[in-house]
Length: 316
Ligand SMILES: O=c1ccn([C@@H]2O[C@H](COP(=O)(O)OP(=O)(O)O[C@H]3O[C@H](CO)[C@H](O)[C@H](O)[C@H]3O)[C@@H](O)[C@H]2O)c(=O)[nH]1
Image (cartoon, rainbow, N blue to C red):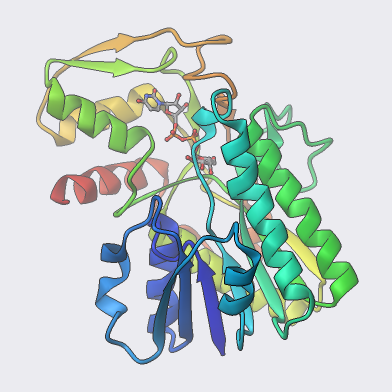
């Protein structure tokens, strides 16, 4: 079976590539290397089952070429920064909606059977039900990023029903681990390397979210994909996260402890009631009952995943 991973040189994408290669798939990666790095997949470059294409999905012809001969597409290429919603909405639209539309247009006349998409917990906005199940609605994202992910989910479902392929969306919690090059843990480590005496925390530090290690994420995606293939469904959605959650202040404490530091915490206060930035969801915990009903379980909880990630990022 031949698989295309868009964004396969990125953080989650490269770990997924590892999982697929280890399972014996033929894997092609399409990545524009804007945020990803060849370094993340360099250990596969000499493998005859692996192929790398540097290209931008904004160009439809590039996408059409990349899906030639492919049975399954894992679509992970995206700009993951919720925080640029206010400054660069057009970037988020292009890198989440336009390129997904191009992929779907390319798939119309192709033999691709399955599309797996990484959506986000941010589609739920400030959910009134916590833990939030997939059936929660109406969905009111509070960031352009979350809106763009929801738009992408919606057109994927529409194309799947009209053009005869099957599609699966994962609404991911905050995914962390080795090779991540953005996000709260990465930021805290960099800030403390610059100034070990003081740590700036955006918002009021009470933002509480669920974090899932990338190893559990990839295991979940591959496990649930197999389950989905047997289900006969045209389109389905699964939350992927943890059963617990952790505050930003607790993350700051774990990062400081692992670095052997006791910095003074300086809270910026943030916006809109202590959020790090406009559109930052303050409380996020997904109901992962549906994912668990397939037999998948996260091996690390949010606290363990955070500690492990700090160690991994410090090791470099
Ligand atoms: O220097 C910092 C950086 C972040 N934060 C806080 O830490 C929390 C987490 O922020 P991240 O940037 O790590 O992650 P987000 O919650 O914004 O979003 C992440 O998780 C989402 C899903 O839950 C999306 O998938 C998205 O792509 C991914 O970056 C936020 O409340 C933020 O305010 C700080 O206090 N200080």
